[in-house]
Amino acid sequence: METGEASENKGNGENNAAKKGRGGAVAIVPRPPFSTKSGKPFDFSRVEFLIVRRSATVAAPGALCFPGGGIEDGERPRDAVSREFLEEVGLAVDVGRFLGKRQTPTGAPLFWFAADARSDDPNVELRPQPEEVAAVEWRTLPSLLDDADFLANNREIVRKIVDGEITLAESRRFKTSQD
Image 1: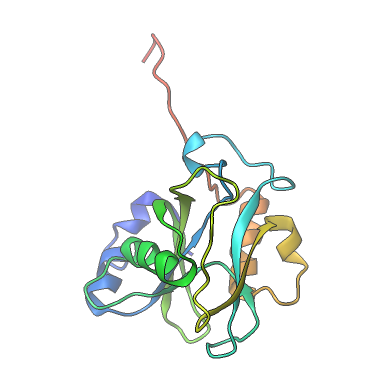
Image 2: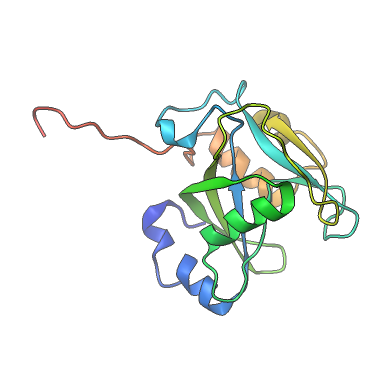
């Protein structure tokens, strides 16, 4: 798995996939008012993240996963995430940190991002699109690790986040008088 901002801009990274019009993009979004932009680490036992249950008409029906979807021709993965969140759950998001690239079980690239809801309301209205999403819920990351309905490729990245191998929060550097 490639991780970090540098890998996002590699020749085989985000921009190349957009030109080919293939692959998918997914984001992990904390429940407001929590934000990945705070620079503070998350208490994963407390902070909930947006999860969808897939409808009966899509691949892996009934499975739990993070919202996201296919990248359209000429679209950047981060733009696909914004579009997919609006289409699938009616939530406007600000896409932030690139978390890495993986492959789907079919071999297509899957780009992972951290993102934040544009609303700071913890009860923000979500409008699941029934053709793709059967239900939406907010869950802690540890609760997903033991859920048999949670997609394996989502479980893998959540394990790395909970174990501290991947950081959701954007780091903040503060200048000191010695800088």
